[in-house]
Image (cartoon, rainbow, N blue to C red; front, side, top):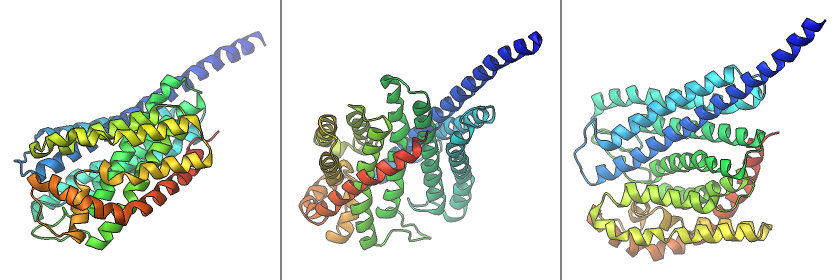
Length: 364
């Protein structure tokens, strides 16, 4: 009887340690998955800019190297996630959803490489919305979702300290960036090639950009607000990080627009205002005001490329990289006239939906 008691007392701490270690491995896998997708999205945005600037493209160009590195990090993260999940004794069912999403995402992400090679072999250069590119972006989005849920649930289950919740920045930013890639594919006229015309119809592209971009900005910022249990400052940090990444990959490489970085940095102001409002008052009116404010600035946040979408239907000009700035500001008044109310509405809708989705992620 004494032996049995000793066996039980020694086995329980061992099982607890194994579960704790497995959870940490799963968390590390989720972090690496999100980090890998962040690298892929940054490299992808940089690569689009190089294409617009007609810079020579090589297999080992810096944007491509960043993307390949990101895929490798993501794959390693998913493998770690699976290893940790397999040995879990506790929360195994709760961690299965993010794992499943990651597995589907990494399948699409790794499969997009050979698909892209075959496509290039038969059809040459492809556009933004080609089937292999859309497969890649979908895989990125799913992996980022899996990483975000995995990180969020770990922090929730363990009542992590406020400083630990800064991991949510890494969890949410790849979701925001990869979802932006999907919207851009469906709205930017960058998909016309010698073999295929995949450019979205201009009116459809106009509607997608006007509704989806403001929704995504507000949704991303309110997701981190809710997942962090309303921690002050994360909305500003996340918004600032997005602006930093977007300006570094879409504006800085184009020397004709380098002087506009200061203008672009002003987009941080509405993010900070929303953050302060949410700190002072979390009433429904304050939430809706903040969501509407964030959604209303989408045309400025997605400077400069969003201009191409609205130029297609409002001006129809042939825009060279050196003229982007001028055409953008020629359009700004008309675009705001058409989109201000819908963008505010979509920002408020994102506030409502983010509450429902965050609640599902933060299960007990």
